[in-house]
Length: 136
Image 1 (cartoon, rainbow, N blue to C red):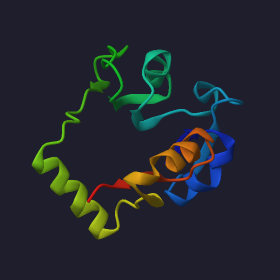
Image 2: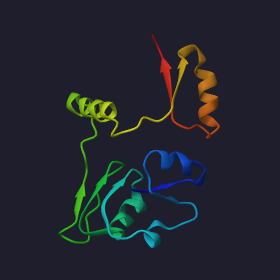
Image 3: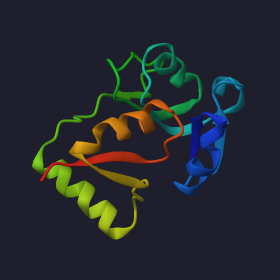
Image 4: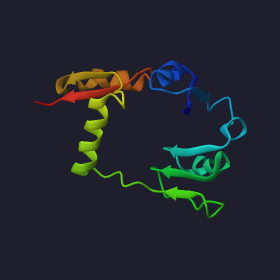
């Protein structure tokens, strides 16, 4: 797996299973990646359009931020997965996490009364993982 990320989260990307991490602030992924079987784009816009440049013929690209662009070749698939919160999707996520196929990021829990402190952490942009509020 190849992942685009800022250099400061390189190690976190590797711990999530990335074999290679491309610092998108320093490298053009279209120049260093080729012949991917699949691309999963979460950015959209120009990045989504460029996804096909690294996809092999017959490959599949999925886009979750904005519309799925038209592929340049008929044998390339451009997919817009249903990312709604349907029970079946959530059950599948639970299965993947429980089996160990998907690793959860570090989760830091805050009481709702501590929202201001959590917001400061979030604004600092050094957060690894997710912030979660306990409301009950």
